[in-house]
Length: 83
Image 1 (cartoon, rainbow, N blue to C red):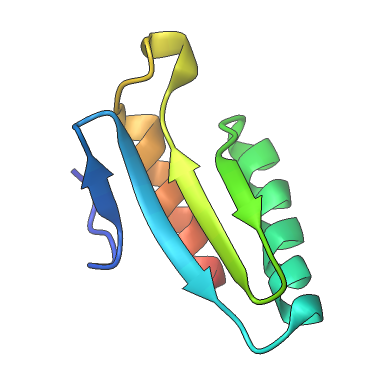
Image 2 (cartoon, rainbow, N blue to C red):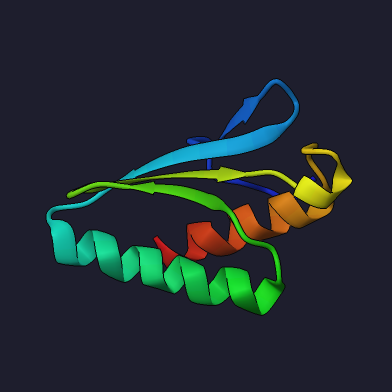
């Protein structure tokens, strides 16, 4: 397993979740767009809940039956680098 920030939660051994908080809408959206580019590069796309100053990211491998795979940990590590 790759080294992840301790703020990532493992939910029922099925997904990784982390809440990111920002000081305003534009910073939140900049982060969301950066995550979108990185996810597309890795061809592994997270579920994101976006509000004014917060983004909740959930990562699971849908094509593996909504379970955790190495791809989930790779994407979480890449997202950590963006924050």
